[in-house]
Length: 199
Ligand SMILES: N[C@@H](CCC(=O)N[C@@H](CS)C(=O)NCC(=O)O)C(=O)O
Image (cartoon, rainbow, N blue to C red; front, side, top):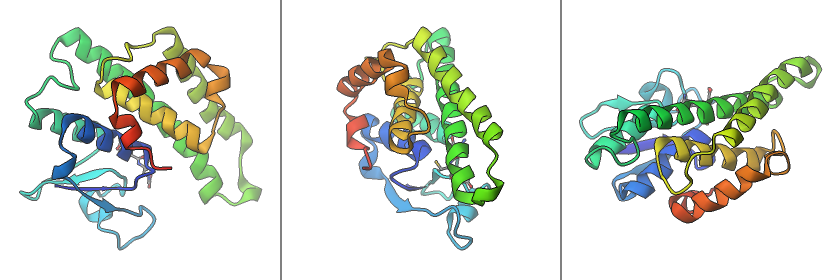
């Protein structure tokens, strides 16, 4: 299987972390992508031009990260990172949605600096995105998942923290210290987190 991503993409890290955790990493050829490059094969494999995208040996293309994680879970028999129990599954998927949403907002903050000329930068819009991040972090703090359970939800949450550490959209460690303890505990439970650190 070919996984198109970069090692710094937080959504790509979800796929890499899941592959490490599930023992699938040796079945992946990681091909670095550049979403800004029109000739990059990424746009052929995902018309949205977003990574990660997974190319299967039979030619199927799979995206986005949520679907790739579901596919990996299926490859190892199911029920490993997407709980079989319905309530646990809904909780894990909702946690994934929250963490992915924080990452979407965090990416938009970075893209504002990357794509928009300084003179056109719109601070209220950046605050609007940062509000999603801080509200999301506060919600996470109130309903912290078990850090010993590796699921699509906790994988996404750990990727999200890794991205905030790298790009520093908000100082989450100062703001939500309980979440810092959560990440330490998850890191112990899931060596795939450290194994996929890009920096
Ligand atoms: N919902 C998608 C989000 C993927 C995404 O936003 N990826 C970023 C990199 S981390 C990207 O490719 N951005 C390029 C673009 O938006 O054009 C997923 O879960 O895979």
